[in-house]
Image 1 (spheres, rainbow, N blue to C red):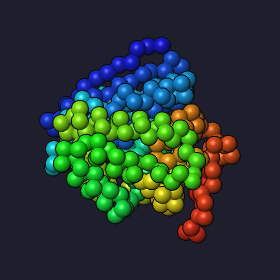
Image 2: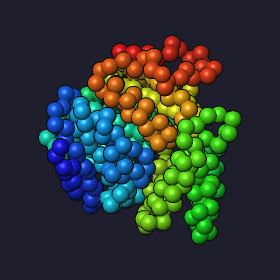
Image 3: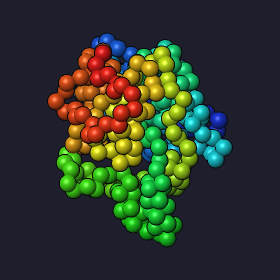
Image 4: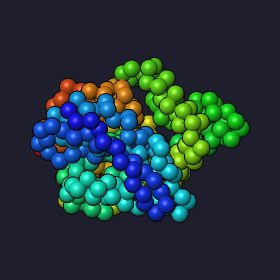
Length: 300
C-alpha cells in the first residue's frame, strides 16, 4: 500500500496541512474527514481498515488544529470552507465523500451548502445543532479555571460538557474514554499557544447549522446519549435536509468514534458505498421521539 502523502498549503496568511492515503483499488470517491475542534489529520487512522478497501482517506489540520496556524479574529467558517475546497482542488478531484464529526460537521455542512456539486455523499455526526445555555455556562466555569492557571480544573469541568455523566445509562468503554478525553483536552490547551482560544471560538461563536441542504445524499448520526446536542435536536436537524437518513448508535455519547469505533466506521462506510443503514444491531431507536413530522428514513 502506498505511504501517506502530506502537503501544506497557504491561504490568506494561514498555513494548513492535509494527509492523503490512497486506496489500491478504489470503488468510490475518496473520503474526506474533518473531526472535532483541535482534532488533526493524524487522528483518523482508526478508520483505515473500513475506508481503504473502498476509497482513499483524506484528513486535515484545518486552521487551528495540529501544526496549522489559527484563524485570525476576522476569519470565520468561510475561510475553513475555502481551505477544504483548496485541498480538493490540490488533489485534482471533482468530488469527495465528506464525513464531518462534531465541530467538523458544522464545517462539512457549510461546505456542502456552498458547493454541493463537490460532495458525492455527506455524513454528519455528533452535530452541534445548538450550544445550550447549560453548555455555555459549563464553558465559562471551565474558562475561569483556565484563566486562574488551573488547566486540570478546566479539563475537569469540560468533561461534564463533553461526556455523559449519568451512571444509570450504559456507555461502552466509559472509564477509558473519559481518561483519554481528559488527556487529549489537557494536551490541546497546554501544548499549543492557541488551543484554548480555538476551543473558545468553537463554543461561543454561532456555528448553528441552519438553512437546509438539497442535492446531496446525507446521513446524520449520533450516540444515543450525546451531550452536546440531544438525539432529538439532531433528528430535527436531519429533517431540514432533503434525502437524509438518521441513525443513532446505542451505548455511546458524543465520543462515539472512541466508544464504538468499529460500529461508527461501519455505519459511515455502509452509507458511502450505497449499502443499507437500516436494521443494524448496534443502532437504537430514540426514546420518546417528539411528534415533529415524519421520521427520517434509515434505508436507501
